[in-house]
Amino acid sequence: GEKPEKFRILVSAATNTAVDRILVSLLEEGFTDFVRVGSLKRINSRILPYSIHREKRSGGGGSNSGDFEESCWQIERCR
Image (spheres, rainbow, N blue to C red):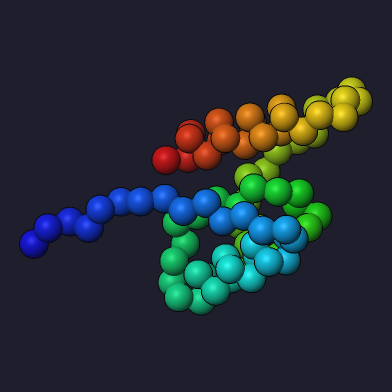
């Protein structure tokens, strides 16, 4: 038989709760091959094992672009 094609899905929503509800549903269906990006304080406790843990760098700065770039790098590294 043929192998199924691999594909990726990006889940995005206006709230952390909405994203977590989708991911909890996937967990309940046995799907665990995902990475959750976001503030650890706002991630559902069932999803925490699938999150990217990152230490905050010292120093101010109002931009989150570095956080986003770091998260993307972490996801690529986890493959």
